[in-house]
Length: 167
Image (spheres, rainbow, N blue to C red):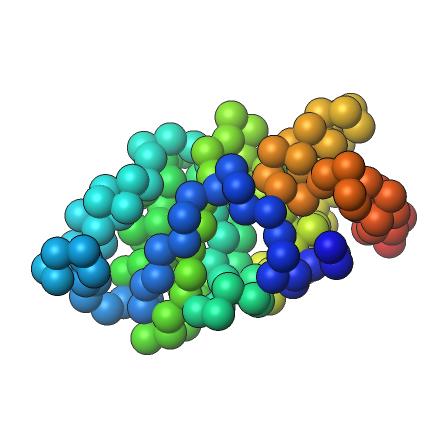
């Protein structure tokens, strides 16, 4: 598994991807109904009313565009803001695959995801602050839960993380 934009990331604990064009009407492919309210399709897609992180990827599910966290709102509410084009982070009219995962520590989860996935539209923010005061086991457990760390890539993951921290 390569570091960053790999298409072979283990998203086993994440949601199934939902495809959406930013700012457009949404269509439920199973019923053929269209919705102008993104909240309805997100409810249908089982986006939880919980804290967590989310990831926007290209339609081919190969390139990472943007990773974010919920701070004082739920995943459903935050994704609704993105999908209506209110956030300004993603280009209106472009289709994305969206995945999410709940997290009791979204700041840590987001930092690990951004460091590992290197999304195209995440700013140059220093993500080391979110790792501060965390022990190594906690970081590795969360990276494993997110699907970025496993017995097959332990050395590569740890070396890349250390490289990032030492930059």
